[in-house]
Image (cartoon, rainbow, N blue to C red; front, side):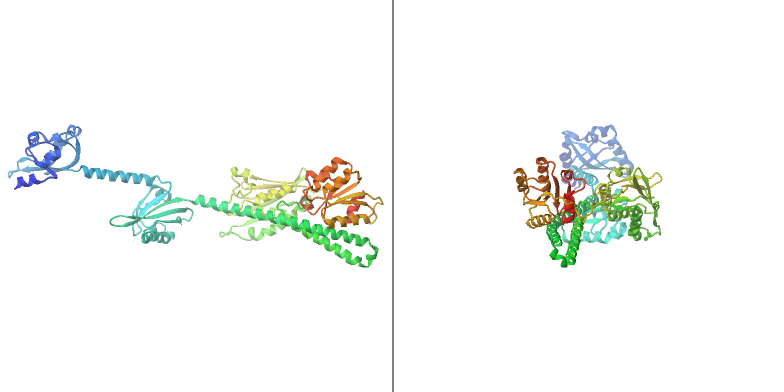
Length: 607
Protein backbone atom coordinates (compact mmCIF):
# COMPACT_ATOMS: atom_id res chain seq x y z
CA UNK A 1 0.00 0.00 0.00
CA UNK A 2 2.87 2.34 0.81
CA UNK A 3 4.48 1.63 -2.57
CA UNK A 4 1.14 2.26 -4.28
CA UNK A 5 0.76 5.54 -2.39
CA UNK A 6 4.24 6.74 -3.34
CA UNK A 7 3.74 5.70 -6.96
CA UNK A 8 0.42 7.55 -7.22
CA UNK A 9 1.75 10.94 -6.03
CA UNK A 10 2.19 13.10 -9.14
CA UNK A 11 3.27 16.51 -7.80
CA UNK A 12 6.09 15.39 -5.54
CA UNK A 13 9.21 13.40 -6.44
CA UNK A 14 9.61 10.89 -3.61
CA UNK A 15 12.65 8.65 -3.55
CA UNK A 16 15.09 7.00 -1.17
CA UNK A 17 18.83 7.56 -0.70
CA UNK A 18 21.31 5.20 0.92
CA UNK A 19 23.50 6.59 3.74
CA UNK A 20 26.06 7.80 1.18
CA UNK A 21 23.46 9.71 -0.80
CA UNK A 22 22.94 7.37 -3.74
CA UNK A 23 19.44 6.89 -5.20
CA UNK A 24 17.92 3.54 -4.29
CA UNK A 25 14.25 4.11 -5.28
CA UNK A 26 12.39 6.31 -7.78
CA UNK A 27 8.72 7.14 -8.25
CA UNK A 28 6.89 8.25 -11.39
CA UNK A 29 6.65 11.88 -10.24
CA UNK A 30 10.45 11.92 -9.84
CA UNK A 31 10.80 10.65 -13.36
CA UNK A 32 8.39 13.38 -14.53
CA UNK A 33 10.18 16.17 -12.68
CA UNK A 34 13.83 15.18 -13.21
CA UNK A 35 13.51 13.34 -16.56
CA UNK A 36 15.39 10.19 -15.49
CA UNK A 37 14.00 6.66 -15.69
CA UNK A 38 14.65 4.41 -12.70
CA UNK A 39 17.27 2.48 -14.67
CA UNK A 40 19.11 5.70 -15.46
CA UNK A 41 19.27 7.16 -11.98
CA UNK A 42 19.17 4.36 -9.38
CA UNK A 43 22.68 3.91 -8.00
CA UNK A 44 23.83 7.40 -8.90
CA UNK A 45 24.53 10.12 -6.28
CA UNK A 46 21.69 12.56 -5.67
CA UNK A 47 24.22 15.40 -6.24
CA UNK A 48 23.45 14.75 -9.90
CA UNK A 49 20.41 17.01 -9.47
CA UNK A 50 22.37 20.03 -8.16
CA UNK A 51 23.91 22.81 -10.24
CA UNK A 52 27.69 22.87 -10.51
CA UNK A 53 28.44 25.70 -8.10
CA UNK A 54 26.27 24.11 -5.37
CA UNK A 55 28.16 20.82 -5.81
CA UNK A 56 31.47 22.67 -5.57
CA UNK A 57 30.27 24.31 -2.35
CA UNK A 58 29.29 20.91 -0.90
CA UNK A 59 25.60 21.74 -0.62
CA UNK A 60 24.39 18.11 -1.23
CA UNK A 61 26.66 16.61 1.43
CA UNK A 62 25.84 19.41 3.88
CA UNK A 63 22.13 18.76 3.43
CA UNK A 64 22.66 15.10 4.35
CA UNK A 65 24.73 16.05 7.38
CA UNK A 66 21.99 18.36 8.66
CA UNK A 67 19.33 15.69 8.08
CA UNK A 68 21.44 13.09 9.89
CA UNK A 69 22.07 15.43 12.82
CA UNK A 70 18.63 17.04 13.12
CA UNK A 71 16.45 14.50 11.49
CA UNK A 72 15.48 16.75 8.59
CA UNK A 73 16.84 19.44 6.27
CA UNK A 74 14.81 21.77 4.06
CA UNK A 75 16.01 23.80 1.12
CA UNK A 76 14.88 25.78 -1.90
CA UNK A 77 17.13 26.23 -4.89
CA UNK A 78 17.87 25.56 -8.50
CA UNK A 79 18.06 21.96 -9.63
CA UNK A 80 19.07 20.32 -12.93
CA UNK A 81 17.02 17.97 -15.09
CA UNK A 82 18.40 15.23 -17.25
CA UNK A 83 18.25 17.48 -20.34
CA UNK A 84 20.28 20.17 -18.55
CA UNK A 85 17.38 22.54 -17.99
CA UNK A 86 16.98 24.12 -14.57
CA UNK A 87 13.99 24.48 -12.32
CA UNK A 88 13.24 25.76 -8.83
CA UNK A 89 12.77 22.97 -6.33
CA UNK A 90 11.58 22.83 -2.74
CA UNK A 91 13.19 19.80 -1.07
CA UNK A 92 12.86 18.03 2.25
CA UNK A 93 15.41 15.36 3.22
CA UNK A 94 14.49 13.20 6.22
CA UNK A 95 16.90 10.78 7.92
CA UNK A 96 15.66 7.15 8.35
CA UNK A 97 16.92 5.07 11.29
CA UNK A 98 16.22 1.44 12.25
CA UNK A 99 15.01 0.29 15.66
CA UNK A 100 18.56 0.35 16.96
CA UNK A 101 19.06 3.95 15.85
CA UNK A 102 21.33 2.99 13.01
CA UNK A 103 21.10 5.39 10.00
CA UNK A 104 19.66 3.36 7.14
CA UNK A 105 19.30 6.16 4.55
CA UNK A 106 17.24 9.21 3.64
CA UNK A 107 13.81 9.91 2.21
CA UNK A 108 13.79 12.90 -0.13
CA UNK A 109 10.69 14.78 -1.26
CA UNK A 110 11.04 17.35 -4.07
CA UNK A 111 8.41 19.70 -5.47
CA UNK A 112 8.80 21.80 -8.64
CA UNK A 113 8.05 25.40 -7.52
CA UNK A 114 9.20 27.12 -10.71
CA UNK A 115 5.73 28.57 -11.43
CA UNK A 116 5.38 29.87 -7.88
CA UNK A 117 8.87 31.30 -8.00
CA UNK A 118 8.15 33.11 -11.24
CA UNK A 119 5.00 34.56 -9.71
CA UNK A 120 6.91 35.66 -6.64
CA UNK A 121 9.60 37.22 -8.81
CA UNK A 122 6.96 38.99 -10.87
CA UNK A 123 5.32 40.30 -7.71
CA UNK A 124 8.66 41.38 -6.28
CA UNK A 125 9.55 43.19 -9.51
CA UNK A 126 6.13 44.83 -9.57
CA UNK A 127 6.60 45.98 -6.00
CA UNK A 128 10.08 47.27 -6.82
CA UNK A 129 8.76 49.16 -9.85
CA UNK A 130 5.88 50.55 -7.79
CA UNK A 131 8.23 51.64 -5.02
CA UNK A 132 10.73 53.15 -7.48
CA UNK A 133 7.90 55.04 -9.15
CA UNK A 134 6.50 56.33 -5.86
CA UNK A 135 9.89 57.20 -4.41
CA UNK A 136 10.86 59.23 -7.47
CA UNK A 137 7.63 61.17 -7.82
CA UNK A 138 8.20 64.95 -7.78
CA UNK A 139 5.47 65.13 -5.16
CA UNK A 140 4.38 63.12 -2.14
CA UNK A 141 2.43 59.85 -2.14
CA UNK A 142 0.75 57.61 0.42
CA UNK A 143 -1.76 54.82 1.00
CA UNK A 144 -4.14 54.61 3.98
CA UNK A 145 -6.48 51.88 5.09
CA UNK A 146 -10.19 52.50 5.62
CA UNK A 147 -9.52 53.44 9.25
CA UNK A 148 -7.15 56.21 8.17
CA UNK A 149 -3.88 54.51 9.13
CA UNK A 150 -0.93 54.95 6.80
CA UNK A 151 0.13 51.75 5.07
CA UNK A 152 2.65 53.39 2.77
CA UNK A 153 4.42 56.76 2.50
CA UNK A 154 7.05 57.66 -0.06
CA UNK A 155 10.42 59.16 0.79
CA UNK A 156 9.41 62.71 -0.23
CA UNK A 157 6.55 62.73 2.26
CA UNK A 158 8.70 61.58 5.14
CA UNK A 159 11.63 63.87 4.27
CA UNK A 160 9.45 66.97 3.83
CA UNK A 161 7.56 66.46 7.08
CA UNK A 162 10.17 64.75 9.24
CA UNK A 163 7.62 62.12 10.32
CA UNK A 164 7.48 58.35 10.22
CA UNK A 165 4.05 57.46 8.87
CA UNK A 166 3.47 53.72 8.84
CA UNK A 167 0.72 52.76 11.28
CA UNK A 168 -0.12 56.35 12.25
CA UNK A 169 -3.19 58.50 11.55
CA UNK A 170 -3.62 62.15 10.59
CA UNK A 171 -4.94 62.85 14.09
CA UNK A 172 -1.59 61.74 15.50
CA UNK A 173 0.49 63.59 12.90
CA UNK A 174 -1.26 66.96 12.50
CA UNK A 175 -4.45 67.32 14.52
CA UNK A 176 -5.17 70.88 13.32
CA UNK A 177 -6.17 69.77 9.83
CA UNK A 178 -6.93 66.09 10.51
CA UNK A 179 -10.71 66.60 10.34
CA UNK A 180 -10.47 68.13 6.85
CA UNK A 181 -8.15 65.36 5.60
CA UNK A 182 -10.34 62.65 7.07
CA UNK A 183 -13.48 64.15 5.50
CA UNK A 184 -11.86 64.07 2.06
CA UNK A 185 -10.83 60.42 2.58
CA UNK A 186 -14.40 59.50 3.51
CA UNK A 187 -15.74 61.14 0.35
CA UNK A 188 -13.46 58.87 -1.68
CA UNK A 189 -14.43 55.76 0.29
CA UNK A 190 -18.16 56.44 0.15
CA UNK A 191 -18.31 57.44 -3.52
CA UNK A 192 -15.72 55.01 -4.82
CA UNK A 193 -14.52 57.81 -7.13
CA UNK A 194 -11.32 59.87 -7.33
CA UNK A 195 -11.24 63.33 -5.72
CA UNK A 196 -9.06 66.29 -6.56
CA UNK A 197 -8.82 69.01 -3.96
CA UNK A 198 -6.58 71.64 -2.38
CA UNK A 199 -5.15 70.90 1.06
CA UNK A 200 -2.77 72.89 3.25
CA UNK A 201 0.03 71.34 5.22
CA UNK A 202 -0.06 71.05 8.98
CA UNK A 203 1.85 74.31 9.40
CA UNK A 204 -0.30 76.16 6.81
CA UNK A 205 2.80 77.21 4.85
CA UNK A 206 2.50 74.81 1.91
CA UNK A 207 -0.42 74.43 -0.46
CA UNK A 208 -0.91 71.01 -2.08
CA UNK A 209 -2.87 69.97 -5.16
CA UNK A 210 -4.09 66.55 -4.00
CA UNK A 211 -5.51 63.63 -5.98
CA UNK A 212 -7.13 60.93 -3.83
CA UNK A 213 -8.50 57.67 -5.22
CA UNK A 214 -9.90 54.35 -3.97
CA UNK A 215 -7.73 51.22 -4.11
CA UNK A 216 -9.91 48.11 -4.07
CA UNK A 217 -8.55 44.67 -3.20
CA UNK A 218 -10.27 41.37 -2.47
CA UNK A 219 -10.45 41.98 1.26
CA UNK A 220 -10.50 45.77 1.73
CA UNK A 221 -10.74 49.24 0.23
CA UNK A 222 -7.87 51.68 0.75
CA UNK A 223 -7.31 55.34 -0.10
CA UNK A 224 -4.32 56.31 -2.21
CA UNK A 225 -3.06 59.86 -2.55
CA UNK A 226 -0.62 61.84 -4.66
CA UNK A 227 0.05 65.55 -4.08
CA UNK A 228 2.27 68.22 -5.61
CA UNK A 229 3.40 71.45 -4.01
CA UNK A 230 1.63 74.34 -5.79
CA UNK A 231 2.53 77.07 -3.30
CA UNK A 232 4.71 78.97 -5.78
CA UNK A 233 2.13 78.57 -8.52
CA UNK A 234 -0.62 79.93 -6.28
CA UNK A 235 1.60 82.83 -5.26
CA UNK A 236 2.44 83.52 -8.92
CA UNK A 237 -1.26 83.42 -9.84
CA UNK A 238 -2.08 85.82 -7.02
CA UNK A 239 0.74 88.13 -8.11
CA UNK A 240 -0.52 87.97 -11.70
CA UNK A 241 -4.03 88.77 -10.48
CA UNK A 242 -2.65 91.79 -8.62
CA UNK A 243 -0.79 92.92 -11.74
CA UNK A 244 -3.95 92.53 -13.81
CA UNK A 245 -5.85 94.51 -11.21
CA UNK A 246 -3.28 97.29 -11.35
CA UNK A 247 -3.29 97.27 -15.14
CA UNK A 248 -7.09 97.46 -15.09
CA UNK A 249 -6.86 100.44 -12.75
CA UNK A 250 -4.36 102.10 -15.08
CA UNK A 251 -6.55 101.39 -18.08
CA UNK A 252 -9.58 102.79 -16.29
CA UNK A 253 -7.56 105.86 -15.30
CA UNK A 254 -6.50 106.26 -18.93
CA UNK A 255 -10.15 106.10 -20.03
CA UNK A 256 -11.08 108.67 -17.41
CA UNK A 257 -8.19 110.80 -18.63
CA UNK A 258 -9.47 110.70 -22.20
CA UNK A 259 -13.03 111.43 -21.11
CA UNK A 260 -11.94 114.27 -18.84
CA UNK A 261 -9.68 115.74 -21.53
CA UNK A 262 -12.44 115.75 -24.11
CA UNK A 263 -14.96 117.14 -21.65
CA UNK A 264 -12.52 119.80 -20.44
CA UNK A 265 -11.75 120.85 -24.01
CA UNK A 266 -15.42 121.27 -24.86
CA UNK A 267 -16.20 123.12 -21.61
CA UNK A 268 -13.18 125.39 -22.01
CA UNK A 269 -14.31 126.24 -25.55
CA UNK A 270 -17.73 127.19 -24.23
CA UNK A 271 -16.31 129.18 -21.32
CA UNK A 272 -13.89 130.89 -23.70
CA UNK A 273 -16.73 132.14 -25.92
CA UNK A 274 -18.69 133.33 -22.87
CA UNK A 275 -15.68 135.08 -21.35
CA UNK A 276 -14.91 136.92 -24.61
CA UNK A 277 -18.55 137.99 -24.92
CA UNK A 278 -18.40 139.33 -21.38
CA UNK A 279 -15.26 141.25 -22.30
CA UNK A 280 -17.21 142.82 -25.18
CA UNK A 281 -20.04 143.74 -22.78
CA UNK A 282 -17.53 145.31 -20.40
CA UNK A 283 -16.32 147.53 -23.22
CA UNK A 284 -19.87 148.59 -24.07
CA UNK A 285 -20.74 151.73 -22.08
CA UNK A 286 -24.42 150.95 -22.37
CA UNK A 287 -23.81 147.91 -20.15
CA UNK A 288 -22.10 149.93 -17.42
CA UNK A 289 -25.11 149.62 -15.02
CA UNK A 290 -24.66 145.84 -15.24
CA UNK A 291 -20.91 145.94 -14.61
CA UNK A 292 -21.28 144.31 -11.19
CA UNK A 293 -23.16 141.38 -12.66
CA UNK A 294 -20.70 141.11 -15.56
CA UNK A 295 -17.76 141.05 -13.17
CA UNK A 296 -19.50 138.39 -11.10
CA UNK A 297 -20.06 136.26 -14.19
CA UNK A 298 -16.41 136.72 -15.11
CA UNK A 299 -15.40 135.41 -11.67
CA UNK A 300 -17.75 132.45 -12.04
CA UNK A 301 -16.12 131.59 -15.34
CA UNK A 302 -12.69 131.78 -13.70
CA UNK A 303 -13.82 129.47 -10.92
CA UNK A 304 -15.31 127.03 -13.42
CA UNK A 305 -12.08 127.04 -15.42
CA UNK A 306 -10.12 126.29 -12.24
CA UNK A 307 -12.42 123.34 -11.42
CA UNK A 308 -11.96 121.98 -14.93
CA UNK A 309 -8.20 122.25 -14.46
CA UNK A 310 -8.47 120.29 -11.22
CA UNK A 311 -10.50 117.62 -13.01
CA UNK A 312 -7.77 117.36 -15.63
CA UNK A 313 -5.07 117.11 -12.96
CA UNK A 314 -6.97 114.40 -11.05
CA UNK A 315 -7.85 112.21 -14.01
CA UNK A 316 -4.72 112.51 -16.12
CA UNK A 317 -2.40 109.50 -15.75
CA UNK A 318 0.76 111.52 -16.45
CA UNK A 319 -0.06 114.79 -14.76
CA UNK A 320 1.79 117.98 -15.50
CA UNK A 321 0.58 120.10 -12.64
CA UNK A 322 2.41 123.35 -12.08
CA UNK A 323 5.37 122.95 -9.74
CA UNK A 324 5.56 125.19 -6.72
CA UNK A 325 7.99 126.34 -4.09
CA UNK A 326 7.52 124.15 -1.01
CA UNK A 327 8.86 124.05 2.56
CA UNK A 328 10.36 120.57 3.05
CA UNK A 329 10.38 120.83 6.84
CA UNK A 330 6.65 121.51 6.81
CA UNK A 331 6.04 118.70 4.28
CA UNK A 332 7.87 116.19 6.52
CA UNK A 333 5.94 117.32 9.63
CA UNK A 334 2.65 116.84 7.78
CA UNK A 335 3.73 113.41 6.48
CA UNK A 336 4.63 112.33 10.03
CA UNK A 337 1.16 113.38 11.16
CA UNK A 338 -0.38 111.35 8.31
CA UNK A 339 1.29 108.09 9.43
CA UNK A 340 1.61 108.72 13.16
CA UNK A 341 -1.12 106.26 14.16
CA UNK A 342 0.29 103.55 11.87
CA UNK A 343 3.96 103.97 12.79
CA UNK A 344 4.35 105.44 16.27
CA UNK A 345 0.86 104.82 17.62
CA UNK A 346 0.79 101.01 17.29
CA UNK A 347 3.48 99.02 19.17
CA UNK A 348 3.47 95.34 18.23
CA UNK A 349 2.28 92.52 20.49
CA UNK A 350 5.63 92.42 22.27
CA UNK A 351 5.40 96.14 23.03
CA UNK A 352 8.16 96.99 20.56
CA UNK A 353 7.71 100.41 19.01
CA UNK A 354 8.98 102.42 16.07
CA UNK A 355 9.74 106.13 16.41
CA UNK A 356 10.29 108.81 13.74
CA UNK A 357 13.11 111.23 14.55
CA UNK A 358 12.69 114.44 12.54
CA UNK A 359 16.24 115.74 12.36
CA UNK A 360 15.77 118.29 9.54
CA UNK A 361 17.61 121.55 10.21
CA UNK A 362 15.61 124.75 9.92
CA UNK A 363 15.44 126.87 7.97
CA UNK A 364 15.97 124.86 4.76
CA UNK A 365 15.94 126.49 1.33
CA UNK A 366 12.59 126.23 -0.41
CA UNK A 367 12.60 123.53 -3.07
CA UNK A 368 10.64 122.77 -6.24
CA UNK A 369 7.80 120.29 -5.78
CA UNK A 370 4.12 119.52 -5.42
CA UNK A 371 3.19 119.50 -1.74
CA UNK A 372 0.46 116.84 -1.87
CA UNK A 373 2.60 114.41 -3.88
CA UNK A 374 5.62 114.85 -1.60
CA UNK A 375 3.57 114.26 1.54
CA UNK A 376 2.55 110.86 0.14
CA UNK A 377 6.14 110.07 -0.92
CA UNK A 378 7.47 110.64 2.60
CA UNK A 379 4.51 108.84 4.21
CA UNK A 380 5.18 105.78 2.04
CA UNK A 381 8.89 105.83 2.96
CA UNK A 382 8.01 105.97 6.67
CA UNK A 383 5.65 103.00 6.36
CA UNK A 384 8.26 100.99 4.44
CA UNK A 385 10.83 101.77 7.15
CA UNK A 386 8.39 100.62 9.84
CA UNK A 387 7.90 97.29 8.01
CA UNK A 388 11.68 96.85 7.80
CA UNK A 389 12.01 97.01 11.61
CA UNK A 390 9.86 94.24 13.15
CA UNK A 391 11.99 94.48 16.29
CA UNK A 392 11.47 98.22 16.60
CA UNK A 393 13.84 101.12 16.11
CA UNK A 394 14.11 104.72 14.96
CA UNK A 395 13.42 106.20 11.53
CA UNK A 396 15.93 109.03 11.03
CA UNK A 397 14.95 111.93 8.75
CA UNK A 398 17.78 114.32 7.92
CA UNK A 399 18.63 116.97 5.30
CA UNK A 400 21.48 119.11 4.02
CA UNK A 401 22.00 121.61 1.17
CA UNK A 402 24.58 120.42 -1.34
CA UNK A 403 25.64 121.78 -4.77
CA UNK A 404 22.55 123.89 -5.32
CA UNK A 405 20.17 121.13 -4.18
CA UNK A 406 18.65 119.89 -0.93
CA UNK A 407 19.29 116.25 -0.03
CA UNK A 408 16.82 114.59 2.34
CA UNK A 409 17.56 111.15 3.83
CA UNK A 410 15.12 108.65 5.36
CA UNK A 411 17.06 105.89 7.17
CA UNK A 412 15.88 102.90 9.20
CA UNK A 413 17.61 100.52 11.61
CA UNK A 414 16.32 97.31 10.04
CA UNK A 415 18.08 94.54 8.13
CA UNK A 416 18.51 96.56 4.93
CA UNK A 417 17.68 95.71 1.33
CA UNK A 418 19.22 92.52 -0.16
CA UNK A 419 22.02 93.63 -2.46
CA UNK A 420 20.53 91.74 -5.41
CA UNK A 421 17.31 93.79 -5.07
CA UNK A 422 18.83 97.30 -4.87
CA UNK A 423 18.96 97.68 -8.66
CA UNK A 424 15.26 96.75 -9.03
CA UNK A 425 13.69 98.30 -5.97
CA UNK A 426 12.16 101.23 -7.91
CA UNK A 427 10.76 99.02 -10.71
CA UNK A 428 6.94 98.97 -11.00
CA UNK A 429 5.33 95.94 -9.27
CA UNK A 430 8.64 94.82 -7.70
CA UNK A 431 8.33 94.28 -3.96
CA UNK A 432 10.45 92.65 -1.25
CA UNK A 433 7.32 92.15 0.89
CA UNK A 434 6.15 89.04 -1.00
CA UNK A 435 2.35 89.16 -1.25
CA UNK A 436 2.01 91.97 1.27
CA UNK A 437 3.22 94.77 -1.03
CA UNK A 438 1.95 96.19 -4.33
CA UNK A 439 5.39 97.13 -5.65
CA UNK A 440 4.09 100.57 -6.70
CA UNK A 441 5.01 102.89 -3.80
CA UNK A 442 8.70 103.37 -4.63
CA UNK A 443 8.00 103.41 -8.37
CA UNK A 444 5.53 106.28 -7.87
CA UNK A 445 8.03 108.06 -5.62
CA UNK A 446 10.64 107.95 -8.37
CA UNK A 447 8.08 109.28 -10.87
CA UNK A 448 7.18 112.18 -8.56
CA UNK A 449 10.83 113.08 -8.02
CA UNK A 450 11.62 112.88 -11.74
CA UNK A 451 8.68 115.16 -12.54
CA UNK A 452 10.07 117.93 -10.33
CA UNK A 453 13.63 117.51 -11.65
CA UNK A 454 14.89 115.59 -8.63
CA UNK A 455 15.94 112.04 -7.88
CA UNK A 456 15.60 109.25 -5.30
CA UNK A 457 18.16 106.52 -4.58
CA UNK A 458 18.44 103.59 -2.16
CA UNK A 459 21.44 102.13 -0.35
CA UNK A 460 22.31 100.07 2.71
CA UNK A 461 23.87 101.68 5.79
CA UNK A 462 27.15 100.34 7.17
CA UNK A 463 25.62 100.27 10.64
CA UNK A 464 22.59 98.33 9.40
CA UNK A 465 19.33 99.25 7.73
CA UNK A 466 18.49 101.06 4.52
CA UNK A 467 18.68 104.73 3.59
CA UNK A 468 16.71 106.51 0.88
CA UNK A 469 18.13 109.81 -0.41
CA UNK A 470 15.87 112.35 -2.14
CA UNK A 471 17.49 115.15 -4.15
CA UNK A 472 15.44 118.35 -4.64
CA UNK A 473 16.25 121.33 -6.88
CA UNK A 474 16.25 124.57 -4.90
CA UNK A 475 13.43 126.88 -5.96
CA UNK A 476 14.51 130.07 -7.74
CA UNK A 477 12.71 133.37 -7.72
CA UNK A 478 9.42 133.18 -9.51
CA UNK A 479 9.39 134.97 -12.81
CA UNK A 480 6.94 137.74 -12.72
CA UNK A 481 4.06 137.34 -15.11
CA UNK A 482 3.12 140.38 -17.13
CA UNK A 483 0.03 141.91 -15.60
CA UNK A 484 -2.84 143.24 -17.66
CA UNK A 485 -2.86 147.01 -17.60
CA UNK A 486 -5.83 149.27 -18.09
CA UNK A 487 -3.87 151.42 -20.50
CA UNK A 488 -2.34 149.44 -23.34
CA UNK A 489 0.01 150.50 -26.05
CA UNK A 490 -1.99 152.39 -28.64
CA UNK A 491 -0.67 150.29 -31.51
CA UNK A 492 -2.94 147.83 -33.28
CA UNK A 493 -2.03 144.63 -35.06
CA UNK A 494 -3.13 142.72 -38.11
CA UNK A 495 -4.31 139.43 -36.55
CA UNK A 496 -5.35 136.14 -38.12
CA UNK A 497 -7.59 134.00 -35.85
CA UNK A 498 -7.97 130.31 -36.77
CA UNK A 499 -10.50 128.16 -34.88
CA UNK A 500 -12.90 125.42 -35.97
CA UNK A 501 -15.40 126.40 -33.24
CA UNK A 502 -17.67 129.07 -34.78
CA UNK A 503 -18.69 130.58 -31.43
CA UNK A 504 -15.10 131.01 -30.27
CA UNK A 505 -14.02 132.32 -33.67
CA UNK A 506 -16.75 134.96 -33.75
CA UNK A 507 -16.27 135.96 -30.09
CA UNK A 508 -12.47 136.37 -30.39
CA UNK A 509 -12.88 138.33 -33.64
CA UNK A 510 -15.33 140.72 -32.01
CA UNK A 511 -13.28 141.11 -28.83
CA UNK A 512 -10.01 141.88 -30.65
CA UNK A 513 -11.80 144.25 -32.99
CA UNK A 514 -13.02 146.24 -29.99
CA UNK A 515 -9.36 146.65 -29.00
CA UNK A 516 -8.72 148.21 -32.38
CA UNK A 517 -7.00 145.32 -34.10
CA UNK A 518 -7.57 144.40 -37.72
CA UNK A 519 -8.80 140.83 -37.55
CA UNK A 520 -9.40 138.15 -40.15
CA UNK A 521 -10.66 134.69 -39.40
CA UNK A 522 -10.38 131.18 -40.79
CA UNK A 523 -12.26 128.07 -39.66
CA UNK A 524 -9.48 125.66 -40.66
CA UNK A 525 -5.72 125.69 -40.80
CA UNK A 526 -5.80 125.13 -44.53
CA UNK A 527 -8.05 128.17 -45.01
CA UNK A 528 -5.74 130.38 -42.96
CA UNK A 529 -2.68 129.23 -44.95
CA UNK A 530 -4.50 129.91 -48.23
CA UNK A 531 -5.10 133.51 -47.15
CA UNK A 532 -1.41 133.94 -46.37
CA UNK A 533 -0.32 132.39 -49.65
CA UNK A 534 -2.77 134.69 -51.45
CA UNK A 535 -0.84 137.69 -50.12
CA UNK A 536 -2.67 138.59 -46.90
CA UNK A 537 -0.22 140.07 -44.38
CA UNK A 538 -0.47 139.43 -40.65
CA UNK A 539 1.69 140.32 -37.69
CA UNK A 540 0.11 137.88 -35.24
CA UNK A 541 -1.62 134.50 -35.68
CA UNK A 542 -3.82 133.07 -32.93
CA UNK A 543 -4.65 129.47 -33.74
CA UNK A 544 -6.59 126.74 -31.94
CA UNK A 545 -4.64 123.47 -31.48
CA UNK A 546 -7.36 120.83 -31.62
CA UNK A 547 -8.72 121.11 -35.14
CA UNK A 548 -9.59 118.43 -37.70
CA UNK A 549 -7.44 118.02 -40.79
CA UNK A 550 -4.50 120.16 -39.73
CA UNK A 551 -3.89 120.83 -36.04
CA UNK A 552 -2.41 123.98 -34.55
CA UNK A 553 1.14 122.62 -34.32
CA UNK A 554 1.11 121.74 -38.01
CA UNK A 555 -0.25 125.17 -38.89
CA UNK A 556 2.47 126.85 -36.80
CA UNK A 557 5.17 124.78 -38.50
CA UNK A 558 3.92 125.76 -41.96
CA UNK A 559 3.57 129.46 -41.04
CA UNK A 560 7.13 129.46 -39.64
CA UNK A 561 8.28 128.22 -43.03
CA UNK A 562 6.16 130.69 -45.08
CA UNK A 563 6.68 133.81 -42.91
CA UNK A 564 9.34 133.35 -40.21
CA UNK A 565 8.75 136.78 -38.65
CA UNK A 566 5.11 136.25 -37.68
CA UNK A 567 4.28 135.90 -33.96
CA UNK A 568 2.21 132.76 -33.34
CA UNK A 569 0.13 131.99 -30.27
CA UNK A 570 -1.69 128.69 -29.90
CA UNK A 571 -4.98 128.52 -28.06
CA UNK A 572 -6.35 125.32 -26.49
CA UNK A 573 -8.54 123.84 -23.80
CA UNK A 574 -5.80 121.23 -23.25
CA UNK A 575 -3.03 123.63 -22.22
CA UNK A 576 -2.41 121.78 -18.92
CA UNK A 577 -1.63 118.60 -20.83
CA UNK A 578 1.23 120.10 -22.84
CA UNK A 579 4.49 119.62 -20.97
CA UNK A 580 6.70 122.65 -20.39
CA UNK A 581 9.61 120.94 -22.10
CA UNK A 582 7.58 119.89 -25.15
CA UNK A 583 9.95 120.64 -28.10
CA UNK A 584 7.03 121.89 -30.22
CA UNK A 585 6.77 124.96 -28.00
CA UNK A 586 9.80 126.35 -29.83
CA UNK A 587 7.58 126.92 -32.87
CA UNK A 588 5.37 129.46 -31.09
CA UNK A 589 5.55 132.50 -28.81
CA UNK A 590 3.25 130.85 -26.30
CA UNK A 591 0.41 128.43 -25.60
CA UNK A 592 -2.68 130.10 -24.11
CA UNK A 593 -5.24 128.20 -22.08
CA UNK A 594 -8.96 128.57 -22.69
CA UNK A 595 -10.85 130.42 -21.37
CA UNK A 596 -8.52 133.34 -22.22
CA UNK A 597 -8.37 136.77 -20.70
CA UNK A 598 -8.90 139.40 -23.39
CA UNK A 599 -6.67 141.93 -21.65
CA UNK A 600 -3.84 139.41 -21.46
CA UNK A 601 -4.13 138.50 -25.15
CA UNK A 602 -4.23 142.16 -26.05
CA UNK A 603 -1.13 142.77 -23.96
CA UNK A 604 0.76 139.91 -25.60
CA UNK A 605 0.01 140.79 -29.20
CA UNK A 606 0.79 144.48 -28.77
CA UNK A 607 4.29 143.96 -27.33
